[in-house]
Length: 83
Image (cartoon, rainbow, N blue to C red; front, side, top):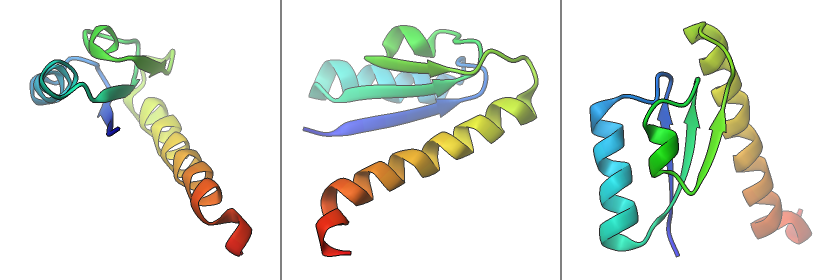
């Protein structure tokens, strides 16, 4: 099963909202959202990780760390025993 990680600082980016809705409803894709205060994106997500800040730079810094953590977790699950 596919997973879409949708990232929008405001949670209101039209193109991100459209792809999240399409992925979820048409293809049954699991949607994980990284957003700031939430916006509409959190409503289209199966899982929403919101950063409680109105400072764009702070929201994006947290999103960057989360992206690296997700990659690390996935890498460990796929390749952990081979390291």
